[in-house]
Length: 167
Image (cartoon, rainbow, N blue to C red):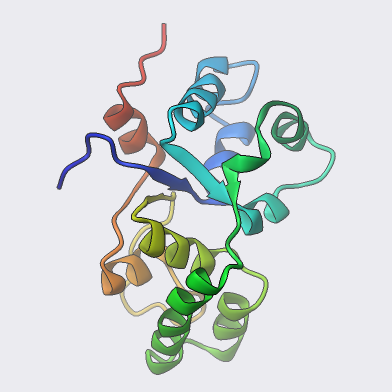
């Protein structure tokens, strides 16, 4: 797998978990700068549905509003992305995920749209989720990625591949 020049698409859990724990703004400002630098270099993005999942009024939301350009959050409602989403949804139904998991995947959840965007645009999807064989109550992102040939990694793999080093 070629990682040089690879582009990354961030799941909400990447930003939220970093903010709430190991990469809090006051603990590791370099992480947040690396997100900005990665975006400036055309390598790190997320989607509009992810932006909607971020809590209003907390420091992460304020950082997004003040420091990130609107271009960071890609439009995941285009006809091309919707066309990529349709087979994902059909697979979720065919695999027998519970109705609540199907509904969440189909409607408000950013996950399916992240996979569709990553597939359409050739991104590596960055998430903290792991593969879950036999899952039925929720649709794990890595399972969908593997089924549809979408690369995925976690935050730490992305940072390593980008050559981020903190002093």
